[in-house]
Image (cartoon, rainbow, N blue to C red; front, side):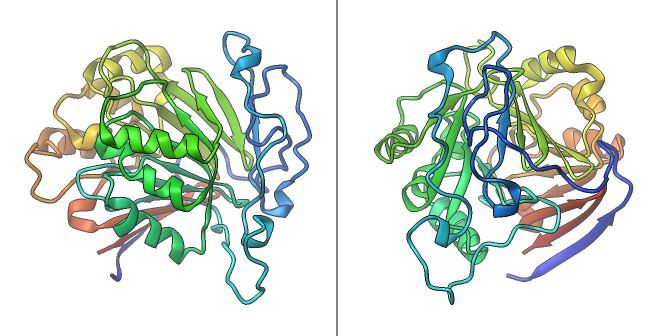
Length: 346
């Protein structure tokens, strides 16, 4: 597999670039429902995960908190207690903020690499994708730990591969929308999380966190639509002068609802196109997001007509460069001080 297209996108909108993110304190990765920072014992200089969670919109509750003693270890093999051989390469954070859309075919899996070493995997494609795509990619980065694993919703093409990932790697916390499914894919993932004793957090719209100085907000999560796609976890991440919008499989109704709730606040630089580019979408949502880069995870020769030609045309009409895994393979976006570089690997 070699590098393909390389594109530099300069002057992206979003938060302003500056001297870099500040050090963050807070439970790692606990919820700070009391409104006060709690010293985590690991700062950004140690390369460990940094997460300072704002209060929940409803004020939170004692049972909503994660364990106060933080994570067992930080990023890096020698901090995890399993390897002290200095000859073994350690994970190195990106020079900036990196989004990697892994080519898992007709599914979703996005690796988010934060500038001070924290990591987040959003979805894991189908079960086999853990072994043939995700774990080999992470191993190439010398990454044996994920600080955050996010299951956007319990469909097999999103949660299936997470079971293998959780079994093989050290995971700090799992974010989910609280839904379950009577499927082998969801059952295997959920059982793997519980067997390893990984903390689980049901997220809600309006929840906020700070990870390595980057702002993370939940825009959607089980809004009561009654079907899994519409209730997908949607995250907005502001980091290194750009805004990333991760949309799961939200449909027309969820997109319309989010648009009404957030309006102009949806404007983003990079977007994961919802539901593999399904025709079940809201054109006004596309106009509100108006991203410079649209990333679409889609299987080659899929039977769903994804991505829908009208969806592609609408993203291009708002000025987005449209990237798709079925023709470009794994796609990465590296952002630093508002500039973005896109690479494809085929």
